[in-house]
Structures are given as C-alpha cells and as structure tokens.
Image 1 (cartoon, rainbow, N blue to C red):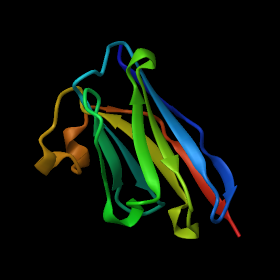
Image 2 (cartoon, rainbow, N blue to C red):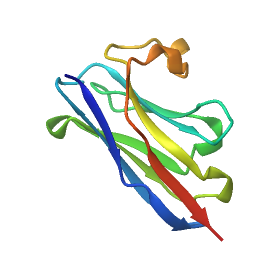
Image 3 (cartoon, one colour):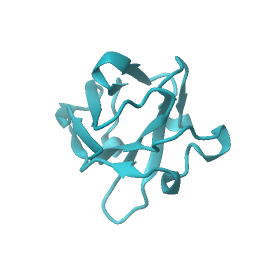
Length: 127
C-alpha cells in the first residue's frame, strides 16, 4: 500500500522557518512528481511547490518564490519543503501529494492530477 505521511508542522512565529517532510512508502517515487499544497478552512487547495523526484529543479507558486525550497532524498523516499520568512496568511494545513507518475509542467499545479495524499500537517503562524 502506498502511504504519504507529512511531518514538521507546528506553531511558528511570523518571519520564522519550518521544514516539512513528506515520506512516501510502498514504492519508490524516483521519476515521479510530488507536490506540496496548502488549504485554509473554506478555501480550495492551493499549489505551493512541486518536484520531479528524478530531477533537481523545483517549481513554485509565485507567492513563495525566493522563500521556500523543495528538495528530495531519494534514499529515504522523502521530499522536503523548507519554508522561510513565513507570513501570517500562510497558516494552513499543508498536504503532500504524490502523482504516482511524471506530470507535465502544464498540469503540475492541478491537484486533480495527484493520486496519493497525506493527512496533512498543520502550520500555524503566531503574532
């Protein structure tokens, strides 16, 4: 069974940093697309960042460029999201999503393309 588990969320002061982890078990994700999305109550899930597990380059929403960095550790089947200079409006539940396949660049930001979701990890910004 494929499982996606996110960890690393918590309470952090505005302007602070967190590193989220997404571990995929049940298979290797080498060559596949893995993404981070976030969702606030009552709102649609929003794309944050994605990576092709066999590649080095990440892709980012405009709102997080320059502050967030996505990376992967193939040996651990884990994708990380380093989040710096966090803003109060970024209080959300952060989800890791595994497409189970390689996605085209044009569809990478579409949550419907991802087949495996984690339960999410809550990130809360304090004043």
